[in-house]
Length: 434
Image (cartoon, rainbow, N blue to C red; front, top):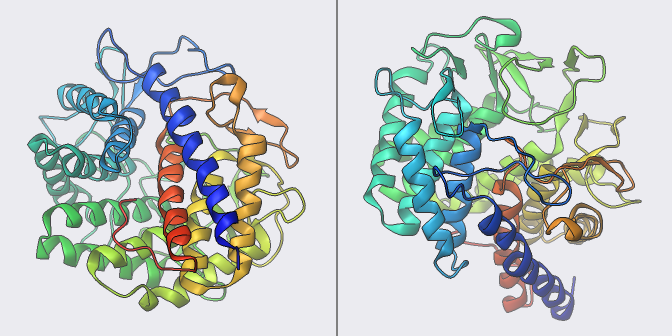
C-alpha cells in the first residue's frame, strides 16, 4: 500500500499542474472573443492553426469542462464566465427548431454546415447542460438538458430492441447502412448515454430519469459485454449482435484506421472505453444510491483485463486497444485512454484494494507527465505517441481533442487522491461529479 507521503506528492504534482498549467491553457486560448464560442485547434507549440470550424462536440465539451471545473472550485470565476459564453453560443446556433436535437457541425459564426443528428452529440447536450446548471444555477442549462432528453426519447429510442439509434439524418430517420452507421449501435454511445442520464438524474432526481438510467446500465451490462472476459464489444447490429467495428463516414474522434483498413476484429476491445465505462458505472451507482459493491464483479473483470493486457509495464502508459485475451499488436498510445485509465485505476484500488491497481495508476501517471504533457507548448497533452513516448500526432487541440478528457481526468484524479491522502487507506469515493 502506498504511504501518505507518496500519495501527497502525486496529489500536489497533479493539482499544481491542473491549476497553474492545464486550465490556464484553455482559459487563455480557447475563447472566441469575436463571435462567441470556442476555437480549439492548436499546434504542438500551443498556437492557433487558423482552422475555425466549430463542431458541436468541441463546443459542448468545452461547456462541460468549464462548468465542471467551476463546480469543483477552480478558475476563480473565469470558468463560469466561459461556460456562460459557451452556453450562449450553443443555444443560439445548434438547436434544430424544426426537428429537435443538436446539429453536428457549424462554421465559426455558428451557421450549421452538417445538420445530421448524431446520437453521441445528443448525449453530450444532456450531459453538459446538466453539469452547467448544477455548476452555475443558470435555468437555461436545466431547460436545455431536459429538452434534449425529450428529443432523445421521442426520436432516438429503439422501441423494438431497446437502447438508442445513433446516426441519423436531420429529421431523425436512420442514416444509410454500412459506413454511414444507420444499421449499427456502439458501446461508446450507450456508455455516454449512461453518463448523461446519470447527470440528468443527479440534477432532477426524477423517478422517470432514474428508471431510464437503470435501464441503460442493465442494457450495457447484459448485452454489450463479452461473456468470457467481461470487456466491451465495440459495435453491434441493431439487435445487439456483436459486429467487427468499422470506421464511420461521420467523425467524432481522431482514431487510427483498423490494421486491415476495413474493420477491427470482433475480439478487439478498447482499454480506454472499458475503464471509462467502469468508473462511470461506479459513479452512476453513487448517484443512484446503490452500493458500489453491487457492480464489483463487473468492474473487477474490466480493470483486471486492462492491467493484464492494456498497461505497458515496461515503458508505462496504456495501449489503445487489443484482443480481449492477448497483448495488443499496435503499441501506439493515445491521450484520452490515459485520461480515463488514471481515474479508473484509482477507483479500482479504492474499491478492490489490490495494489496492482495503484501500480498501474503510477505507471500511467508517470508516462502522462513525462511524455504526454508538452510544457513547451503550454502544457496540454500530445494527441498520439509511439510506445516509448515519441510524438506521432503532435497537435494539442483539435475539433475532437478538446479540454474534456484531460481536464476532467485531472479534476477527478485530484479528488480521488485527496480522499486517499486524507484517509491514509483505500476508500470508496462518494458523490463524484464526473
